[in-house]
Length: 315
Length: 180
Image (tube, rainbow over the protein chains, first blue to last red):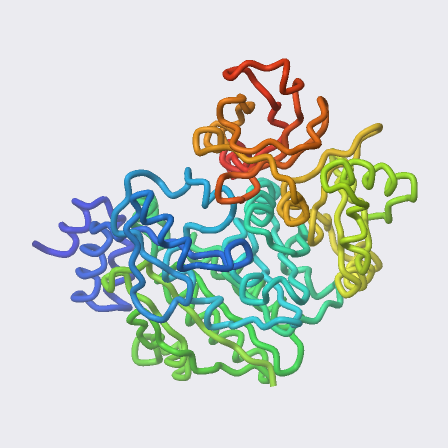
């Protein structure tokens, strides 16, 4: 069966498959669309801000019928749920903020950013607060954490999550592109940018029909937020840029543009976790800087959500 | 953007917190400053000095940033009303560490309470000695996890085994019910 036919049967817009074939080749595109039809086990993060004995919590959840498995050392507090009688979201442990549902791949960005106690750390796209709470967990709530969120409609959920998870943070409702106006300087910034979400098609099948112009629109927004983050970064500071998109326009292209515009910014190597592969380079598209192989891509066929991760440093 | 709370407001907060812990609980945050952010409600937060400095900087620059709003600041301890102070869930966790004589419920009581229900006598495992009708009390699970805040409804003599002993004021199940 041709890839067009296969994609059409599964509900993909033809332009999505054309773009993937152009960037990733036919073999990987086939793997991608096949992987998106296979479910992956949900995962949780143990929140040590609320639970100081993770091993006891794991036992308690086991008694309640949750079969949990730790895949590897990373992510540090991440467990996959292999079997469950009901949703973890209705357990007392969830309501008390001891656990948070969070895919393993989405735990990796904060793990790599590695915020430390006493630092000033920003999350420029903070809602729904899951990664923000992970930042606070890494810092043990010691230091200054600033979450920025533009959408009023997402603030309520953000506040609910950070209160439940015991996060000590400032939340500012504003467009992150204006953050430089506040004259704040951060040691570390997480930009988990709004994206097309083509790495999480398993969760949201609507993303099979995303349009190319939407990808281009998001790419402009991502560049704007990342540019603001660069301006708010202390010297020697680090920015972790991540998306759950597979599209190079939202990932390698954005980073390449930042590296071109800001010579003081460089790209750092990142530890490759969860089967992460190198980012794309100029062999795939001449608009991508060859240094982008230092960034990382988690492809969905490895049994995780699709993710792109890049670590930038200011000299 | 925010303002410091007044002495009168602090007294109001202290009296409510002291009812639960038996001491002037705002002393727990003596190194921090209490501030009030007014949205639809007057929400009170406790912020450490370093964060307060940053908030002052933001406050000075706010005119440069269109639509900027401060939505949350470190630790929300509750909502200040005209004649009352409603304790927030976040602070219940912290105050719970200072409660010695605990009001403990069994697993049925725990689930009922977390789903917004009141507490019936038959689900209580341990009742504090200083039980006074109308008093606010932190409810604990049998694992000694704080579950929320309740108010004694009647004296122990007044209640039968299946009737309510305490009214649910706020519980951690709120997060689920509010769609958080």
